[in-house]
Length: 388
Ligand SMILES: [Zn+2]
Ligand SMILES: [Zn+2]
Image 1: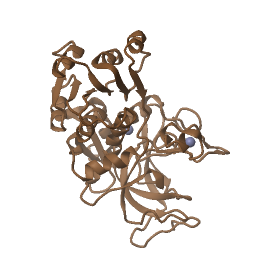
Image 2: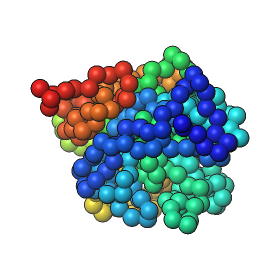
Image 3: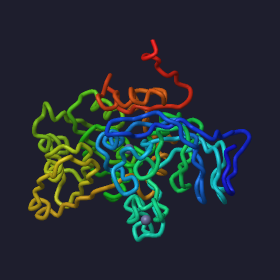
């Protein structure tokens, strides 16, 4: 029977001893296995995972390893379960937890900082100085599920209560998986200064963070909000999420000139760079006006040459952001539960947990114009193609 020291369970939510879990073998290789259901410790709860979205970072981890770090090294062949954008139902409470109740629906943010380093004390827990130090005889209390500890491509996971966000019944499982994505966009805008009402904002790159960046910037009152990208179908979704104008940089080769044209001939106040394109930083620093701010929310694969002289001469600020810090997920969830924007416009496909490899193929190859692909352990029939 499932139990642990000081752990509270409920007969309404029986918890099994074992669960289905996908684990990472060699690069690109996922295997469906069985693992013991983890047991929450102090300040933790057990979450029954009801839905998990696939993120570009998951694809990166599964194929290449970083930014996951398991036992201080690459995540391969270590019985590691990836997946980090999940939501579910509280199924058991660790010792002393009274902040949540069994049966409550929650979504999660990723980073549980150590709570004792300089950055955690400043509220910057996504930049925890003890990142990944939670193995062997070192346990600083840091967890980033799906990065340094087991994640969400399974049926149950333990989460620190600081990583939970309560959600209303009216929010669907699929929508709730998108709170952390909107939270990342919210964190970027927070770091840029937060008060963007009436300020001009460009978002470059209509991936999930860019599209929800448009939605969050608009919900915060920014004007105009301009989205640049290369795919018309995604730019159209940007317009539906609140962009005042879009620029297809495939047709309009000079993106900087196009942005200025749309902003009365002037540079904008802020750029949120979500494309990771090789020339994106040099374009972004020319899209902003003097004293403007640029948030870098995507990472290019290669080192990027940057025109430093232009940055210095024009007093431009550059911000690198990691994850969804400073409780940004709570602010994003507030916008979503008040229906200030409809994040479900970026959810395109749902598969059963058993079909994770197919779901990953859809996300990676953008099959059928896939944007956000979700897998669910319950309520979705698995494809039995191989058996027939
Ligand atoms: Zn992610
Ligand atoms: Zn810390």
